[in-house]
Length: 238
Image 1 (cartoon, rainbow, N blue to C red):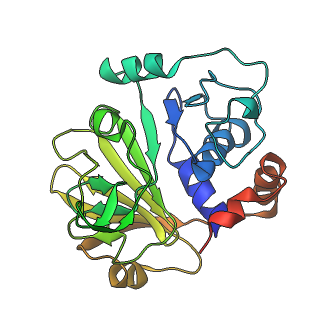
Image 2 (cartoon, rainbow, N blue to C red; image 1 turned 90 degrees about the horizontal axis):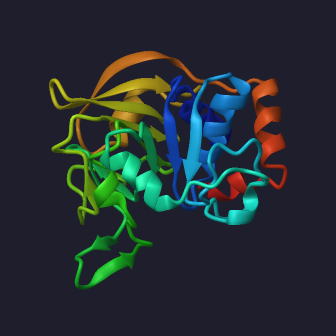
Image 3 (cartoon, helix red, strand yellow; image 1 turned 45 degrees about the vertical axis):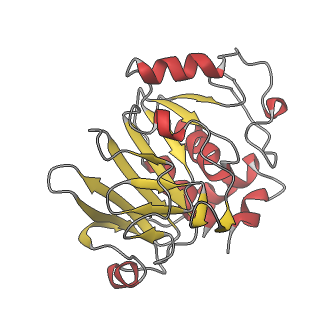
């Protein structure tokens, strides 16, 4: 399943985009490298490890580890944030615990804020960058009515008042938010999923605009495995 999510992320990236990868974002960093080095997309990969478009990586438990890249120019995080403020950062990834029908995301708490059932890692710069980046790619590997919710328990960040593109990549498919009619559309599915299954597992209404089925061939799987030989990505599967 995880390799399909990685491919879906790669297919969501376009030529000439500056792509920022945050902490603990193994699917995002693998998807970015797959887009650039397998599909040949002309993207520039940035991130919290402060490497400016590294030529290679070694996947570690944290994509913020400065030692996962070698011989790479440095771009301090503050300068990446400056790019966002100037409207020059094209893509940012987030892995929220909850996403709602208004493009609000929750990386803070499940339940009430004062006495939460679960306290999450926090949003870092989510509130700042999410409305500024041109395209937000949100990933969640447990697509359910508890994760794609009517209303998040806590608004860590929001693209509600922005005009940017918001894409959600999950273990069931790829959804995209339409600013024009304020609706979520299912754009891609996987061999094991379908529109009915996505409807069944989403708390808000979604609409069918399926363009195809994303599957992973042997060559693509081998490329991903080469980047992640210790198979750390599989630890994220439920």
